[in-house]
Image 1 (cartoon, rainbow, N blue to C red):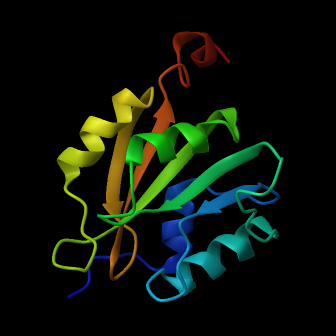
Image 2: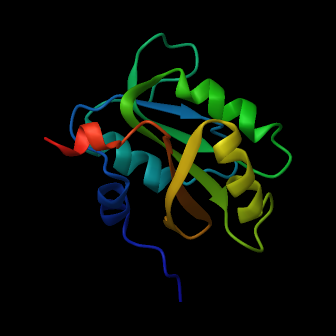
Length: 145
């Protein structure tokens, strides 16, 4: 019944790699998916960094629920930690779950924050994942590699 993938497949789809540094924002022990969190940490071999870190990170995992505040502000803040080609993975509760976020809210917030939405998928039983990248990331200059 659940269309979510196995945790290892989800981590692969997120593009998480060994030794990457991942910033986690919005973690709440009461509702975040611990299995996905553990699978990401196992893949990278690192624990999540938090917003007190001064490190530049390869990706940001942002757990976001309706009522958490201003999504644009949170995305702009998260961008300051990212490498040039890093992504923000926005995890939002699925339809019917407490804190569900309308997809139109994400579509409105991303460009205002200077980001583009590239993909969304069912990450686990209760959460969907949406990949957001800075508009300059993936430009034609990068494709010539």
